[in-house]
Image 1 (cartoon, rainbow, N blue to C red):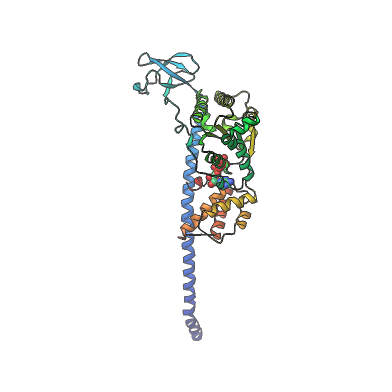
Image 2 (cartoon, helix red, strand yellow):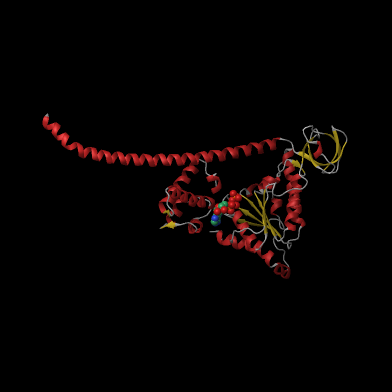
Length: 406
Ligand code: ATP
């Protein structure tokens, strides 16, 4: 008995030393785990915020789709505090009732107003002129993106240069040969693979103004308003020429016409007709080119693809192995890195879009920043790939790095 006590008493200091080390190691591990959980929580919170914002936006969209489209008119005269005379955009003159919530001082003859389609009551006072910035258009005098920043799309760059750049820089070639230059091209492919980037690069090379408009912005709730926006978009492009109109998500206004459509659908079709009229109405050698983009080419109306409209379709596919290597190398080159094996990352990122590859690089940079390092290691990129994979499997991945980081 006493020898047992002695034995265990003699061994105790060794054990407690080991225990202490083990405890310290456990503590460090737990601390790291806690830090990772805190980081994850911050990430998830920002993702929840983003998703809430998106859900609100979609709610608004659904609400506006449910409402019948409004009629646009110009106020001719205010008869008294309840009634006014309005000329609608198709020329009919109505006597309408005034909405008491609208400030009477805003109701001057010549003001543009929106009327309820059924009751003809004035619903709201509209801006005098379409302001492209308010309506979701983006205009840049000369974007900063160059062809060098578009990786893995060499063939597509060549095709775009021939169809858009050449007519802008050397229109005389087409005139001499006696052929019509293309007016526009259609870029087709999944989100985040470089369609916008490519359109911006052509605008940069040709010193053209870049005007981006999203199709859903043109699918307006006001009768006649979508068509008016299309007209003004083209007249803005002519005023700022040389210019490139980048019409993103063209499927929002260019989908095949269906029978039995709602009044909202009919309004979208009117907007499409206006777009077709604008496309047909300008000369192919005018300094305005149109690049449209969609990831749903299957639903597009054939009328858009006729000769003289979007007669060239260029596919911008998901990056294959070679393209992923080019995109990763391009983004990695801009970062401070240590011994990165790009080929290994290419293998791990099968099925990633260009935007997701960029997001991987940004995420890897965040790993380094969190650990207070100033260079990115291979393990950071592998960690970033794992994180992005887990977001993809939860269905929460977005193709833009902005959306990833809120
Ligand atoms: P969407 O259909 O969602 O508008 P998109 O195809 O227009 O997508 P971009 O906006 O061009 O995609 O790409 C988003 C970002 O992803 C770019 O700003 C760029 O950082 C990166 N990216 C995408 N494709 C490429 C590429 N081929 N080369 C380099 N970077 C790319």
